[in-house]
Length: 247
Image 1 (cartoon, rainbow, N blue to C red):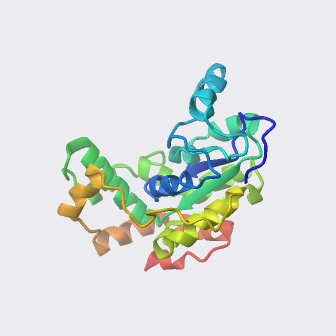
Image 2: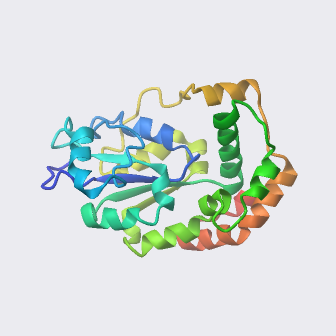
């Protein structure tokens, strides 16, 4: 079981991201574990005004047992330059959970979600959207150059505080994927979450099951050509072979 906390406003774990990389499924499996307190995903715990910080904590975690692990998962944290400073001040020993996805696939998923959210259908093709957002601070470069963000996080916290997984790991073996997460947090890794193979039936997922779209080889080549240097940089940074992302 989790250990008794002296400072209950400090979180045991924080999910950093990235968006469109399985964070919703991951959170649902995390809070099924009896040693992990159930809270809400994307609480943005480290975004509120400092004066409201403990009020937000009480709202989120007042029902948690002293022997439960507490944490939250807000995928946009990874890209936010201010968040590491707030975490360093309030919860410097937290374990960080990070899922990284092939930037081509993540970009395509982002495009689908954005189109559905804005129009309820596909209005603008992927290539057009991608090229429109290629400025240095555009959404695609900012969200897919993982190495730049990770190196910034490493300046604030030691590497051993990070549990870095790939979306490929989730697809290949979801049970091992989530049990490795449990172990990283400190919870019993032998726990098998019920119904972990079920997929969430959101309107977005239902729509694209009925109206499937697939990334063309040309669009994939375009996307990977933009992020090739960043992928190799990430590969060196995390010590994992990522060459399969190009095939």
